Image (tube, rainbow, N blue to C red):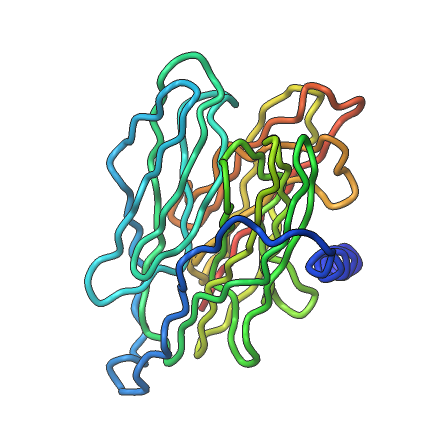
Length: 292
């Protein structure tokens, strides 16, 4: 696991500095100032799980689902799920202040519905939504990677990806990684548009808590196959966030994440579909970020 994490982290860092045109635009600033150091702020509270109402996604179009945290809490992680077997795909999945905003694209021929999810909590003396450097992705099937690291002394709670430009993309991976405990967020995105897009990873980071990164059972997909994988927090810990996707060395055509969400009190699930043009089988993995 440590070797895999080291290779992925090194690859991600190299990817951040690839030359290219400036991306079309950037997400709004999402950095939140540190919480108060008062006794009230330090008191630990169990995370709250919220979800949006189902949102209609028209055939061939995109739609956004927003899950809003209760007053007095901040968003730790989030994602979305949909009942369609592979044609509705994840594109943007980002925190914005006290909400989690998820955008999907419906590549099918019928309308579908998507539900957004957020994990919300408090009890931290410091909290930041940290945006990584923008990376340009070439058009017509180009693929690239990016990662972002939490500030020193802070641990990762969750993360996601911002896409600048048209949303005809596929997310191959959006997940936490680190051989030092899980303080980075890594993304890999393929651009199916006829123009350049920009990608940025976003990490949610907090202090005054202990976390562990739990890797769930993986799965192997034949070309065109669609499957879920789940990671579950051990007893005595609490789910804070999660992610997953294709493994780092199987990138040609790769896989497409269709869902990434909290599927049970202590579990994080992703669904993914192997590209039909793959010439071999592809592996997917899931991760849960668990705190005490």
